[in-house]
Length: 402
Image 1 (tube, rainbow, N blue to C red):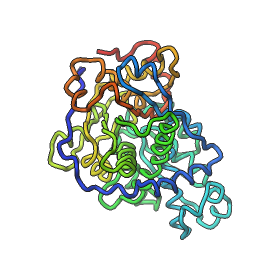
Image 2: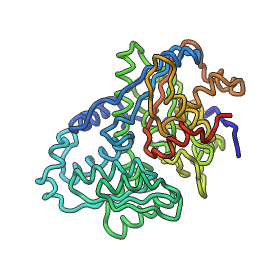
Image 3: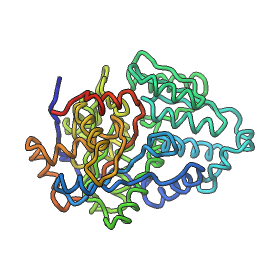
Image 4: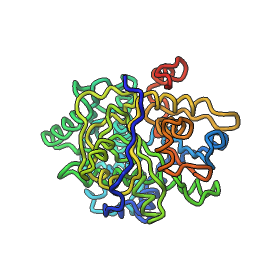
């Protein structure tokens, strides 16, 4: 079993990939829409001041997405906004003029008729799509890759979706969703882009902008003008690209140093940067990582261009790094808040601890400029979305640290 954390510094910074669709002006429209949901409230930004002292940095702040709309993960932000934008387009209206109550009304349902939304997911995205489709009084179909959690499958079905686990990996599930959409006239709501399918993925990325904007304003409330470093996990890269794009748009040339974190069994972005040819490279085959939400082998082409041109360093992490992050956040130092973070949510925290405490990563730490003045923003994208796996790791010590 590979136990080593691998990293590569990005030598292609300074490109021209457009981030305008993630500007503050655009994301304010997104936030306004999300704020119209009855369940809306800002998710907490936890100030882990004692952990920061222990690690030797000025601040460690964790955006806790386990509180998002009662769904235990951030993904609903992207799916819900993209589905709303699609309906607005069908209605011939601007999303800025529509809110949750209008879109979920019987009148709009009657005007649009029956729509079936289809997606592929490891769990969190599909649950968000199913939840939104249910609120819109529409149908949803969800395909999950081989090895998906049965708990996550049942959570999706509980939202009214027709959901199943296929005998294939995530990228094969995406292709199956697209094929069925073509065959039956369904609408694909996928958080990855490919040639000819860019509009909805861009809307999904905008949906994630609500989270980045919230974190930014919450940092200001803590007296932090802006983060010096942002750590973001990546599967296809939609979340990472959205966060990167938002901060690059807001802060211009002075944007934070950005670290992209992937599982070593699905490290398509790391491998793409390592190839250093400016093109996205895929990882194929089974991807049996505990970081199920990040087990994606083909980069989102829109996100890839943003990450290639703006992100500073890419890490490929074994599963124990995520497990360490889960234990670190779930068993905090005295005075710090406890954060229940799932396998895909906790890997940035596990990596940060290793970067600051392990001499084996001293070169990467130095290149990133992590020091006593650093204000670090981490994103915990999910809670215990697979409770049995969470307990196996945090209680029983599965995947021990190296």
